Image (cartoon, rainbow, N blue to C red; front, side, top):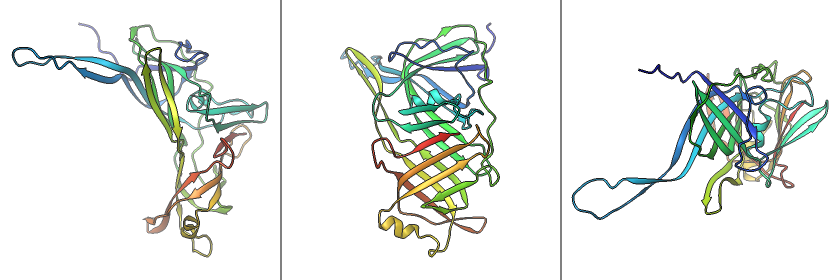
Length: 311
């Protein structure tokens, strides 16, 4: 009898592809991912019914179609530790319709991109069995909640490949930097429309629409549209200080800025220059009145609806 295979004994690698769907060959030395909450579905798709008309009463069986794989996980949202050096999670975000601009020794800037979306190859080795996802593109959420480490949640879809028995790789995770807790000390700025707020939670959903397009001549996972949404919960103010109801009624587009980190090489700035205020709500926590707010990042010019800058 063979020994059991352990789920925890897994190694995740990812590399961007030069040509869509061609295995990028990620390595443990250069492309290891330090992930949390991994969920993998290796053989998703449809089952076409045969509907055969034959004597007797029995199942006809099915034919698998539109085969693909899905992979979800979170990573720490932390800068690289050196200004102008891309973080370890950079390639993952680039596979979510995001462009990366590196200014040497100064900054790394991530912005949405409408065309020319990159894709990549995942290798997931679970205790000696390797699962490969080619042509992978994804969705992403940036989450910054008070008294928790900031995260990026990814949901990827890729082309199906038969798994194989392969020895686990040796991985190098040194490029993954320990995160800073979102707190009063570590997160010096959170403002909406230039007004500072006491913030409890903040999340930017990139809103990518992923679709499988499996036809004769090409099988691809495409990002066909996107609709970003920023959600935050803040302590309520007097309406004289700030009136989100009037802003929502006027369909006002306001700037949002969140700065996390205080040291060079470890600072992350999320900016939404023109976010439209949606209808606010009211809640409470610890008997403190709060405003759950939703804002839609609008693009004043193409691909300008948000930016994530590491300095």
